[in-house]
Image 1: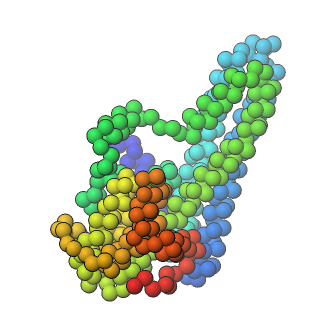
Image 2 (image 1 turned 90 degrees about the horizontal axis):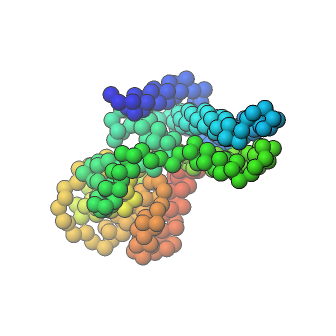
Image 3 (image 1 turned 180 degrees about the vertical axis):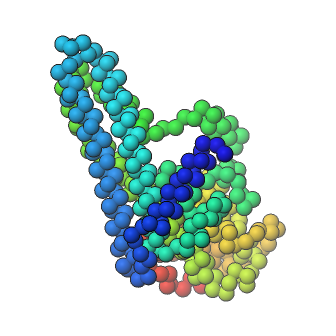
Length: 356
């Protein structure tokens, strides 16, 4: 087992232990549960901002402490840069570790409130592993790039794209927050010659990093909530869209659903956990060309739009799919479906409007 796998299993263990020891209790009332989930998310965002503030203040304090040492006491400009860089890297590393642990802890408390069964949380297979999904969300990963359910998310990337991707993977070029902050601070330090000004620049930069932390955590909390709520929402969505049951729908409609799922996954170039859940419930795809009626295609398009709306970030490539659905379903219907899914995830509002 490699280091990456060991770290993942350690994170899963931490997540599960937090679920068990969490002071939260399952909340059956949807409005009350929604309020509690909102509160947990807001507190996580505030803690992220506070951690960014503390991290920055430590660097500012170091710069002010060194102010009187430069020149007269033999501390050169290069020495100052070296010390500030080391302190900046250490504080940022600790900050990122805290944010990672705090986001997983918050997700565990959310899972407890939503009363996700313990046996489902303990699944270790990637297709069914909620902890895996949340760990990837904490790292900012929109989804998985590996082949699943016979679908390769990178099928449309092309040979050149695959080669570039392999090269970058081998070189391990990752634009991390640590590197970003270090480079930015060093640029400012070089631009400003006096030590006192360097400290003040660090102080001026604090609001920027606080806002970045809060914005990043807010995005992460929204994604984690989407993955947690999506786990229980997906079967409800299928039952709402196809009340006759998947086993009784027209084969052409089922084929259209599978083909539509493959199209949105290969367009986005990743597979989101909510899409994994849908494909698992849809069952095996018999890759046989089957004609579908206009009415059945409309049902498929509406369902695919709903899944797309709960499946992560929308790139410029994905927006083209939305425009195609707007052409087929109409702009008003697209907006209604997207709002229904947004309300179901972020307000825990049940789906009530008839889709047939």
